[in-house]
Amino acid sequence: SSWAKVHRFPPAALARPSCLRGRRESTRRRMASSGIAGSCTSGLGSAERLLRRSADEEDPCDRGAVDGAPMASPLGAAGAGGAGVTDRLPRPLPHRRGCCRRRRSAGATPVRRWEAEAQAIRNAADIDQEWLDLFPLSTAGRHVIDRHKRRFKLSGINWYGASDAHHVVGGLDVQALPRICEIVRELGFSVVRLPFSNEMLRAQAPEPGSVNFDLNPALAGKTPLEIFDEVIRELGRQRVAVIINNHTTFGTWCGGPGENGLWFVANRETPWGTHTEAQWLEDWAMLASRYRSCPQVVGFDLRNEVRATPARIGPGRAFPWLRWPTCSTSTSDGLTADVAEGESWLPSVRVDWAAAAARCAMRLQVVNPDPLIVVERIVWPQRGLARYVARPGPLLPRFEGKLVLGVHSYSWTAPGLYIVKWAIPRRLKPLMATLGMLGIVSWRNHADVAAAAPANLKALMRKEWGWVLEQDRCPVWVSEFGGSLGSHNDMTWLEAFVSILRDYDADWAYWPLNVGPKPGSGGGEPYGMLTSQWEPPPTDSDRRLTLLRGIMAPLVPVGGGSLE
Image (cartoon, rainbow, N blue to C red; front, side):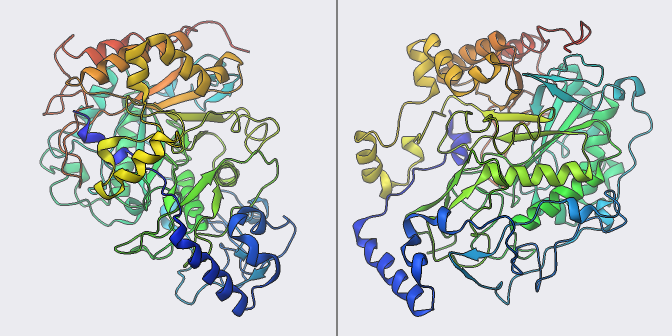
């Protein structure tokens, strides 16, 4: 019954077998013969230390530079940031290999500087101005508040599709866009988490059949990005806020360790060239500028489900080790190891997600300082939030007043290195069984915990993220959770989990609104809650919607007293 979620299970990390030790030695010899000597030759086990440089060191090979030129604003000198924007932007990542420097390979693609796309779009003129006056949102302790200092609870729904193979939100092939947005409002959701892919930003047309232009004549001739604009405008007309989410790099279903696991692509060219962290920053800066006249865009969710990624990707090129995202507690603009270009001879390099998120947040606040900044925790291996709320740390207090932490939870997820047996390739099952017996990986997931005792699940959620709310540190948005009506395990877990959300009065977003086939994956979407014609289900016919309606209203009422 959970087969539809198989692509969301990250398989286990693969251990380095002893037969590969010779490769490490040969790598050291090649490094030495290339003149990379000294401490570099001992760096395979301490890549993060070797690849860090001082913040004031000049490096003409920064990722954001071409032939040593400094990185420029995506908006140009006359853009939204005005003159001097470049001086205030965080420096891009250094191109640094241990103690040596090397220029970008000849085939590397220069960072695309968006121009026309970065111009602010015109918002819909018929949006309720009294509602728009609630924005921008900010944070006060554990709560999200409106501009009048009243609680604004994020009671949301995910509406995917622009992150997938069709490059547009789901349902446009069977229903009119205004009607879908009206349904979102009728169901009582206050916000939509709207995923997109970096590939969608560059697509020239939606996939054939993904939009019924008889039902949606206003979308004819528009690019996927322009259709994304129309979705945001139409949701605004329905008084539904939007948080846009960089869900994937490529327009594919979000999966395990693979090309969508990190915010950059380290090992190959994409159809649009080299997708480095600098390009990821440019893409986000363009969107921040584009929607600066749309107050209903209340947040930027920087990246979905950051997770370990194979050292190399592609047919016959997957090595048995992973690149590991980490979350440092450094208060500096700590620099991520350079693995975003070319073929790395350091296949186990760690990359610092918290530092990258801080760089992105600084960039966005220069271009459009109003929306919230949502930083999701690393989803695999899955840990708590202590490092994200460290004070001082990479995110706080720097982004206090705008920072929201994102977590995802499903019946099949679990802390640490969690594994789902039926999601493991057959050739790896003996290895995974051994790792499970040794306690290195875990087979016990949230559904198992809930089935044993709901109180145990609440204790686990408290350990993972509930304590942050209890201590009034920062808002935590459970921006993905869901289940299938046809699965007893899912529904047992969901009943217990929604009770926890109610007890914490937490912000949340159910996954998903969508029904029908998943774009490009071939599977159905059993977690969706609309009919096949994208209409609301009959009253009280969907237990999931009944549960959600019980937690939509905040315990601190929106119309009540100030939270100052």
